[in-house]
Image 1 (tube, helix red, strand yellow):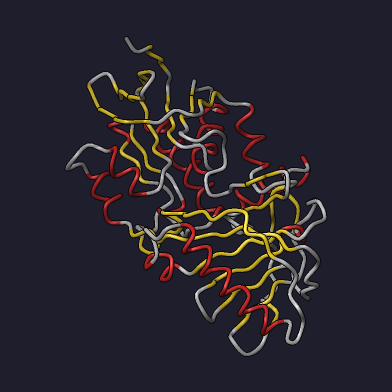
Image 2: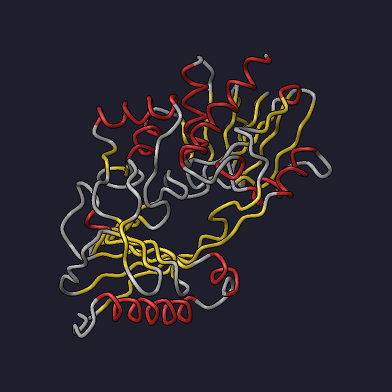
Length: 332
């Protein structure tokens, strides 16, 4: 028989939206838990660390525009959890490199996920916990996992839209909203080179070919020295190769990287390159959304949260999680 766990609020997903929601609810005196299928927090603010290097292979940086998120970023700055990324960022159009327009960019330190690891430490987060079903009853929500059953009058799904859609009751307004979101994939490749490339920038937006982003991860603040690079493919190419074998994706992305480097470093012999990992972000970014901070049905104790509801930025995820909790508990 499954163990039954009772909370005021259950949040599904330990990315920025989920942990921000859980922290807000905890600050309001609510008993809250977070269920996360992975082994740690982060979501797309992920970091992959191995003995031969470290890569932020999801979100590469974030900005802060709204007063509430700027206040949160300031707290993280004071705690040493984030830092400004002031290295030059380039734009490549296939013929020339130009400097990306100046803006305040931030990264987690010493890893992108650092602020989320810190936030999760003060919450009840259950990892390796895959939610298989949610049901709404008169008493509230029943959340099923393989090991346990969780009960709460309030539920927040802080997941990509397709994953939320799969869990929500058929025919519900929440399911229809999630079904209407369109999310694009992204293939990421992590590699290192044997000696410095000495590129004149830390990262580049690539507007020609099928790579969209190339970053020297070690040129972010408070990273170890090294030659670790992150490559992202465009949404169009990633969609076309969504089910391709990782070995094929690796070969094609490496060839494209070397082609771009030949433009940037003409006549220079390239160092040996070691591909360490390719990762498929199936739900990397929403291209069509409802442009709201959070989707809330307070009479049911239900909310959806995530950057797919806003503008596909980390700030949007943060604001979405906070807004979901405030809307739920203001009603109650």
